[in-house]
Amino acid sequence: MIGLKTASRRPLRDQAEKPFWISFSDLMTALMVLFLVAMAVALMAVTQGLKRVEAEKLARVEAVRACMADVGALAEKPEFHGITVNDNAVEFGALAEFEKRGYDLSPERREFLRRFVPQLLDVVAKGNCGKWLKRVVVEGFASREGSYLYNLNLSLQRSQRVLCTLLDAQAADAPSEADRRTIRKLFLVGGSSFNALKSNAEESRRVELRLEFRELDEKQESLPEIPWDEDSKCPLDKA
Image (cartoon, rainbow, N blue to C red):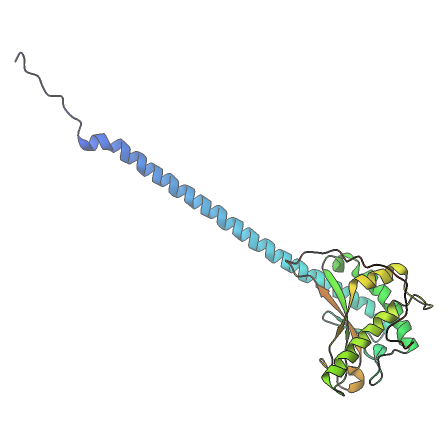
């Protein structure tokens, strides 16, 4: 009929909202995929990091083992017969034993140490040792005879005697100045009283060289610069 208007037909609610819900669903799917990708990348990075750390640990262990094997090969030379390498320690046995309550070394034992240590320095300066070696501790020991504090001081004096022997520039067979400089930087004195006793008192009165290595997360530090002097007088010697 003329004059009557037909109301416009509204789209159904489902038809109006259908495109919106499709887009939201696609967005959630995309976000889920991105999340899974990110998690996969993160897990891969963590896994690779752990593998790298384990590889570095293994490399350090192998380097230390190879270093001590090189030291062991040096100790097996005929001129150094009597030295044994036990873990990270160089044991001199009867080649560096002391008298009861004494901290002096015979001329033969001093000469032996001055021949061996420079060659040891050559070994530890090489690749297997050089990267991880931290220091060398001259460890003195005492027998059970006497008090703990007395033996502790005695073991320190025995360690000091070894350094006095190696740093004596007046000795006829003194190590080179370069070696003596390295010894002053790299070697430390340690005393253990009557810890790590041997089977008898004579074997317990001894010194050893213990090689210490950096840990994996420990930074490699340059050796300290120590003011140089040629004072070869040992404080242990009486005036």
